Length: 326
Image 1 (cartoon, one colour):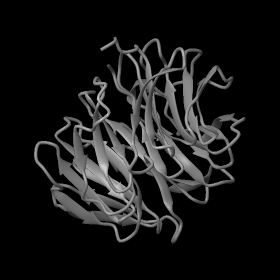
Image 2 (cartoon, helix red, strand yellow):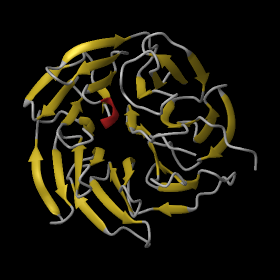
Image 3 (tube, rainbow, N blue to C red):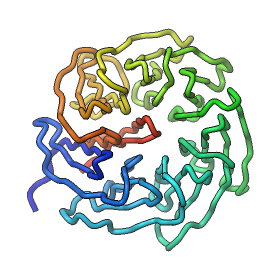
Image 4 (cartoon, rainbow, N blue to C red):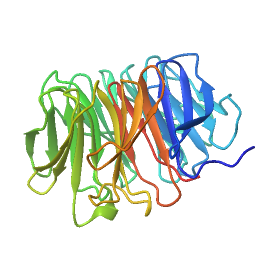
């Protein structure tokens, strides 16, 4: 097996493929056929060994370092599109959310689904709180629920706007902020206790900056109005607006390649985007640097680089991408 590139970009598409790209050259060096459905979300395990692909209605786990096109494990308990998937920090269990209205927990050391929570509406997004004991879900009816894994019950329910789908959730690394983005283009921020009209169109994804950016804190939002906006969380002032996307942007990630850092604004920061115009692009802050032609409709992106691991998400149907270190 040939040596893995130092920086890898992985994409998944409506053309039923998962592709691995050498990010520096834009060369596709591995393609996995995914004939059963489109891929709604990609996620990497904490040990960087496996890539989870969420489809309809399955979750498949692929070996990152193998050339085998076959999954090493399948999870088949959902009955509709799986829109969210992620892992506990030690990699002992996985969580998922689906349009079948359920949030599930899977022990990776045992077969089958160990827990199931009923959301009573199609689940669009699920995030794990940094305390590792709470899951937060957002659904098509506008409900945000906090699932206490210790009590094995819903501990909190919020409805920012009735019958307005919650498209994306993100939690600050220290748990101090939770942001929910909905179909009307509004971001709701808890602790600041107010809504901010971030975009004219509906918001596809939102992303908070990681710990390494402290003391600065930022929120990035991607919208159907074909823009990405960067907000300063302190007072929620608009820092930058990125434009020029031909079709809906479905993913974003801020990255400092040399240091392996995350969302922080300096000359070394790049923005990686995935769009339904079939491109995955690398941007230096504002100006477009490099674009890789991918597949029919770009859905999911994974960025890998040597150094510190980062988090990122994206999607029209909530999809995601995650960085991992080879």
